[in-house]
Image (cartoon, rainbow over all chains, first blue to last red; front, side, top):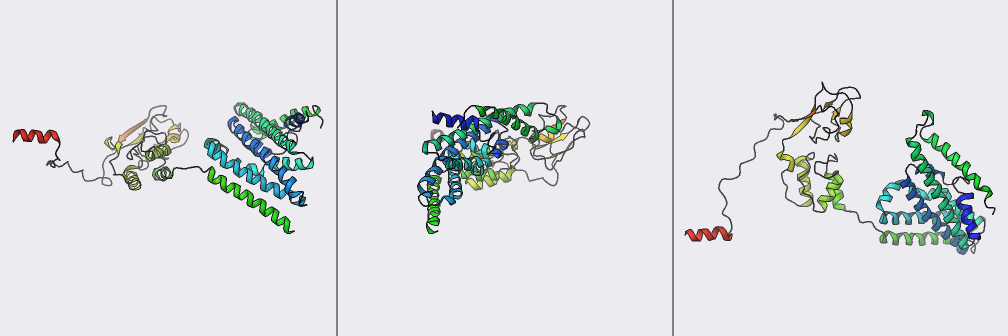
Length: 192
Length: 195
């Protein structure tokens, strides 16, 4: 039950993009087409889950026993960079098309603050192993859902008759704001 | 202090080893010969080789599916360079049998729609919207890609007149004296009969 609550909380109620405002760069950058957004969502899901788990392990079995908590951020960034590199190699091997489509945004997952955010929040909230993994996975699913929804809306906006001053990024920002407003509506659903 | 340095260094070393192993494990085999062929092609993406662009043609050559003499914009120089790279015999251009021609725009009919400018792979057409266009003869490769998009059909292919710049000696005629062929059963058989 508690695990289900963690998932619902991270996917809907405390959505990382629309409620916590983390990971906005790929949210605006890779949301022009649904296919790219789906690919980016999958890559981020993989990276986030893996980095949440491995940063938990490193924090629990390396940093805490050695009293090195002050090196947490640096160690986590190291983990994330390695996981992203690994993901890039796997994607390049298994799906060259997706690799070309994602382009620069794949290595840029390293600097996606949602990834570091999940790792640090896991420590802050003293999550266990499975809780950390679920927290990372839920955050990634929430990120992917919002990214795909947003890209679908933007595809429609591209064809719509938008007033000239609002064209381009301006209307995208307004749309993101409205989506964020809508997701605030979930805040009464679960209390953790 | 020391154990902090050791911990981070050890962590970095472990990740380095994992990444190094996976770089070997997930190596992507590029086709270096296709890259080299692609570098020699003129990148006009005109499609006269019947492939959708220069890169697919390069891959087809590398795979041995296509001959090296199908690139009219590259001309003889490209065929020679490809023959040199691949160690094959240079061949005359396949399209050379067709007379070399350049596109000419009938400026009276041109409505200045710029469609042919967008189609031209070598930027050989100058002009602006609602101004008449014209073709720079030296730049035109004769790829005929501009004929299709023209809405008023005002572009024609005109064969190049030979002038002093591109005149060449005619190719020598095939020698009238046939070299004696090596014994093929048919010929020698007949000769024996007649002898």
